[in-house]
Image (cartoon, rainbow, N blue to C red; front, top):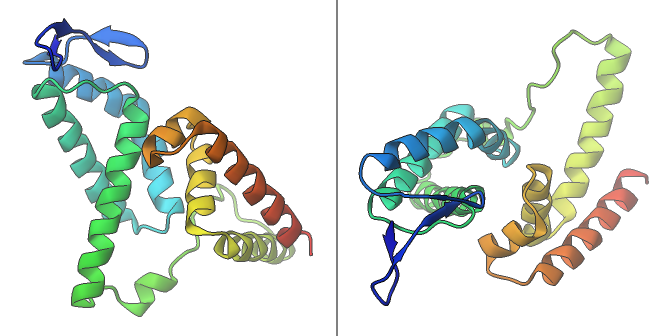
Length: 191
């Protein structure tokens, strides 16, 4: 149970399922959430152009913070949205440190090609896929930061409500921003 501001006991709610989040339960809850969300959150970080090792490190830190929050008895309504917000904050902090110390090498910044293929495509297929990917990447770069983030979160399965919670805006704002972003990407990729 978690103590509300008025001192009454309130159950911890994760994925609409009340769960006590204090003591030994915190480790079990964090482990269950890791099993449910780690793979998609890792993909999200890779899509956001994190290097695999950095994505692993950020993910580990986010789940460690989740575990600590649960042990403190914090109420977490939407764990995936909470984790995305933590990951965004960690990415921002990392970017600030790298820009302050200049630790990001040019080669790291240019490595944006994801590893998706499970079979070796023909040379013609490779060219076609590369051109499509380049058009999509160019279109995504033309979006505002907010549009880009909303589309990535939507692609990872977050609802408009969860995205709104992460960014502290209304659901309507998220829906409108996503609609404009999708329209813009569609226009830019079909040029």
